[in-house]
Amino acid sequence: MRSPFKLSFFSLSLICAASAPAFSEVIRYEFTGSVVSPGVTGSPLHAGDRFQGTFFFDTDRVYVRYLIDGLKVYDPLFGSAGLEVNISTANGIFTFANVPGYLAIELWDHFSYNGTPPFWDRFTIYCTEFTRFPTFFRRPFVELYLDVNSYQESFLESLDLPRHLSLPGQGFAYVSASGGPNIQTRDYYVGLSVDHLALANQPPDCSAAVGRIPPITALSGGLVPVTIEGVTDPDGDPVTIAVTGVSQDEPVVDVGARPTCPDATIDEGAAKIRVERSGTGNGRVYRVAFTASDGRGGTCDGAVTVPVPHDPYQACVDDGPAYDSTRPCPSTTLAAAREGTAVLGVAPSHGRGAAFDFTLADAGEVALTVHDVAGRAIATIARGRYDTGTHHLEWRAEEQPPGIYFVRLRTPSTSIVRRFAVL
Ligand SMILES: [Ca+2]
Ligand SMILES: [Ca+2]
Ligand SMILES: [Ca+2]
Image (cartoon, rainbow, N blue to C red; front, side, top):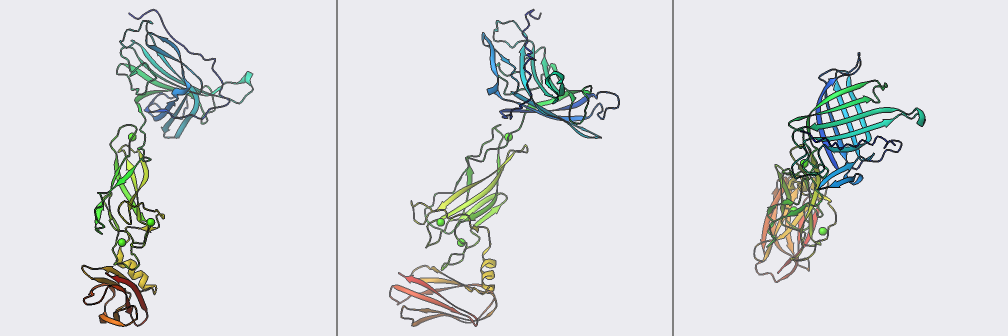
């Protein structure tokens, strides 16, 4: 038998909607259902129309009124909760919006809480917006009421404010709405049954993401995978990360070096970056942008940086994500060549010597020669007709002493000189 003692509190005197507070969406729920009673004759709503709604409440704005034997009861505090219902009908969507209200939890039981759930739980959110009439004539303009009841089982996970509320298996839930901006009469009253109620999905949090690559043991020039860690989901949903772009603070084709491009690849959302940096720079910083998804429609966008220092254990200076790491080489160098900037790169080759890459916009006669510091030509690397595109040639210093040398590329339209060292 139900205890004769009833604990109830509906302090409807807490009425002051004039200054609606901004809701802090501390705990947010979603619910859906259908219209049961569409209201007055000629109503634009119909039985069976679907609705979806949300509510949220702010635990910081509610205070405990009673605390006896572990049983907490929360006093309804106006402005602590908000409720919104959108009803989809053949006549459009009717919104009963987002008015301030209060949250109430009723536990119908005797006071001597003995560790078993009370046999009647009731969870209520009540929201009202008032007309702008002078106080004396003021009347509710929009009224929303969400009520969840259970006679047999507790659907509150604890006697703290419910962080995880669900529809009771034995009980009922309904929403009633009246008035509203769409319907200018106070007499309009809609009854809605709730068939789904759950904590609203929250998007993943990308703010603490970090990017990692395998330890750099050598500037291999190869591509290594980037791992993105530290993305979390407040609901504990598994998160999928898809890289959307990679940029870097150094050109993908380094002046005076053999072109290596692209410096990053993205394959089905996974990124790899090239372990290289400019020989004349302050370290390369890659920026990897990504989107994280929780599989329930929640996403966040983030970015991580991955440094490739100039020297081991040296800090990297991030000069900004100026260059798209995924740009392919040939088109870059060809495009540069077509703009009149012939491209010639030098990189150390195995042993004593150098490797030369040059790119031609148009096929034609080419002379590639090596000179000492006095300007004397000491070797001819190439002479003759070369096709459009990038060509790779190597030179061994052989008997030449260590020192500074120059390589010169000559075409009918241009001449470029690059400096390099022989060790
Ligand atoms: Ca989530
Ligand atoms: Ca490169
Ligand atoms: Ca840098």
